Image (cartoon, rainbow, N blue to C red; front, side):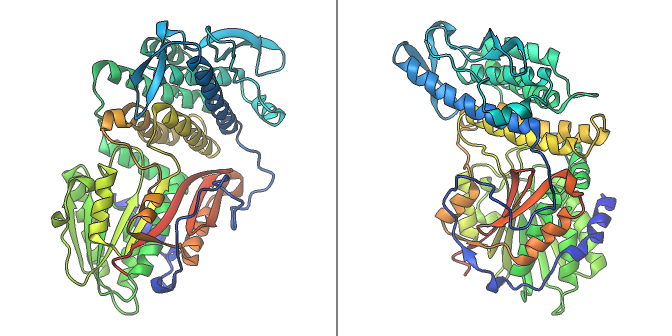
Length: 513
């Protein structure tokens, strides 16, 4: 851990303390737009970069899948008796005698020539919903992907639909086939790696459904180790840390007593950089208190020791308070607030596990605390809705993340395997096998930004200095790697090619103003 702290110390010059918080324009949460990733104001200087073939194909096919399912459901509801079974937060039709299931048929392949492929069909209906009818613009991209990869993903889509209609026996059969066809190890293609991990997660869901269990087991050491590797080879975690630190620094300007609540602190790797700037302020260092939330008291205590030692070397007055509970499961009396201190809440969201508990309780506690600033970094993926909703969104999202790693690391790189296995797979498994209202008992907010805006908070536009932070981080990676940055609607978005992956925003309580 010491090495990670020294690396953070070496990147301190990225933070600029000169833009005052009070001069930042506040902005309301914008209405949804048709293109969530508009043309960037400032972007990583990439020219003539093709879209990634796998993520483009996944995006197109899943959109076609939803259209076909809607058409099929409408047609079948007029002709077929159905029984209703409960899915995740919705009721879905399960046709009698398991007629609605993926099947094989022979027709023109995705590629030049003829061949066998998988498509959607329903033996009771005249409608044949095929996912192979694609626009010419997508066809040229698909031709660059090997046929095996396309067949794997098609079978994975069929398996997801079988799970969504509670046809677990058919899903289990297809998953056995997928596990024999796809491996995440060795010289495997990106499509094969994605399918292997999604198949494993969906297999866990099927087993969980049969056994009635859904509790995840997290190896914190392996997760933290993989986080450090991910931080070294991609800009995403650095982006989250330094843009949030900049917003917190601006909120703390001219404040003598400050308090930071980190809703899932882990090893606290983002805080040494902020501590250094606070310790060297012209007006002198403030009194800093930090409340670290997490699931392991052992990890929290070790993190507190590391941060305390670092602050001591800087001459920064510092106190650390660990709370080994989820934020949404405590009340305001458990947070050690003091009169006159300026409060910041930081939340770097991830999908490894449910770090905060019930969303509505988390929101109520944030309202009660009335922080001067909330720094929120969200993954651009929804944890709410039905299983099929989550599957479609996560397949496109993680295909893009896997592709971004593949553009930087060789297929047999041990660091890439550690990231994929210890981080990305665990997130996929949590979304598909653990998450969902049928298992957790509640539906997660689709976008926290919209919930904050609808309640007691105002958005504060990310400052020019925050944009400069993000751009400096992006400049550490060659343009050919395809990362890009968007500033708009008061937020900063970091993505790969033309897919947004992480969005950073800042908020303030109306009561604190």
